[in-house]
Length: 320
Image (cartoon, rainbow, N blue to C red; front, side):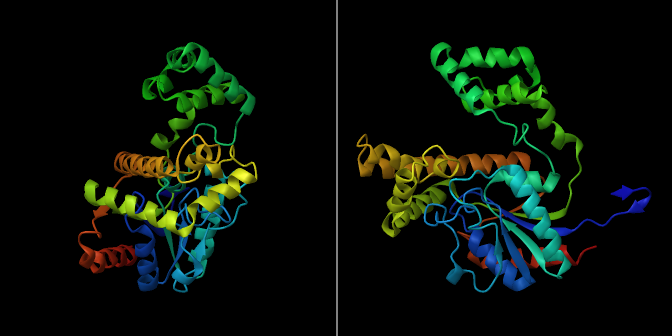
């Protein structure tokens, strides 16, 4: 990349991406130890204080002395946006690099990672109108999802082409952006297509056989239940935080119907497992469709490949 005829050297960073329960945390720590790195969480839920079990948050005694960032920084009553993540992560990358360390971004929130790599915004991030959203949700209840989609198609056909009419949340978000900004949702979505990558990033993708991954997810949920996941969800419920961003995380929102005697504990656990598996599938789809030049590895079935992954990362860092 050149600026006024001067060649600019992009900062090198390492990114570990992939679905839940595939081993991103353990790899990030091994990589940080081997390459003198520090870890930035790319997870939208681990930022919240006190929500440890449901977010599979790495705990201090598991960090092995490696500095971790963007963990336990925001109260569950507060919102945390893609833009917030961008600003904090970019500042942390600059700081880590200035001290001669390697920034390692590890997480499964594809939106966060893409926003950092390409410095893009997403559909007018931060531009919201809660009352308008509720109006549209009521309208969808009354007239159906197709009615909302047709409204979007009239004002922003490019966005409508990319959003299924039954994706009510996304359709309403597109309408909300137009309502608040006067600009079409597609104008924001097209930013990635015209912006060059900000960093020289090596992306390590972790995956494994779907059946194996789903078994790991089910086991992780059982372990979370044993560790006291219900208590974390109860905290959100008792604090009347059900409508916050933090409470929308998988592993928390499912409990609220149990607290209101609408579901059994067994039904809640089954729902958490199902939602977690679906989320993992969406994560994989995102990373495979939106991330470029990902080096994919299966360290679940081939743990001895760890040395190869570390060697590949080290080679990348040494290449100018």
